[in-house]
Amino acid sequence: IATLSIADAKTQKVVAVDLAAFPKDLLVVRVDWTPDGATLLVTLQDRIQTWAKLLAVDPTTGQGTVWIDETSDTWVDRPEAPRWLEDGSFLWLSARSGYAHYYRYDAKGKLRNAVTSGKGQVRGIERIDEKRGLLWFEASLDGAVERNVYRVGLDGKGQTRLTQGAGTHQVEFDADASLFLDRWSAMSQPPVMRLCSGDDGKVLRELWK
Image 1 (cartoon, rainbow, N blue to C red):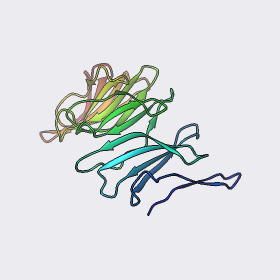
Image 2 (image 1 turned 30 degrees about the vertical axis):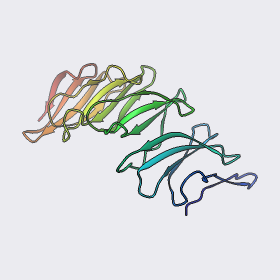
Image 3 (image 1 turned 90 degrees about the horizontal axis):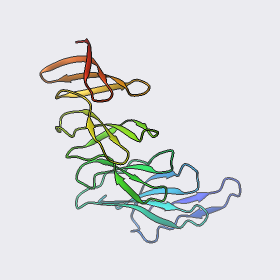
Image 4 (image 1 turned 120 degrees about the vertical axis):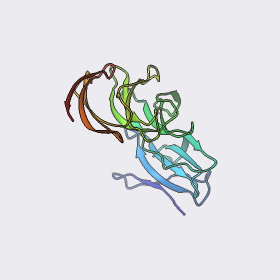
């Protein structure tokens, strides 16, 4: 039976997190903090992992509020930690649509918008430019065995595929994402390195093959 407590290093006071509303045999699968350290974030799952809940806990009282509730008839993977942005909002990876995509929440756990979309899995974030409100990510939106890089607004608008050609792409951006190197390969394509435009993915130069 899992329990969770918070210890104050200065006062040595220990506060138990109230988990009475959940099944006794629950799993505590992740523990994080908000960037300001004011709220403990606990990810809970049932034993057969058909749901996952992000619980925001007041460390002074141990009382919590469910911010996010993920459910499935079959299986819910252990969620990743929230990816915090400078404005206090955060990105959350979820397969609630049947595919793994990022969603943006405000600082109190209220959903603002879906960021990525499509019939395929997001594999990870390549980079974020908060000043421009843009996110670059790797995904298999154009084929289950393909790896492409896309750009989208943090508001979920303007999603664009940047990498050109079927297969697998590994990219590296320059400082302002105006250019990127693309190492491209496929079953019918030996590895090739190309210099591409960061705006539309246009191939500017083939460097080697």
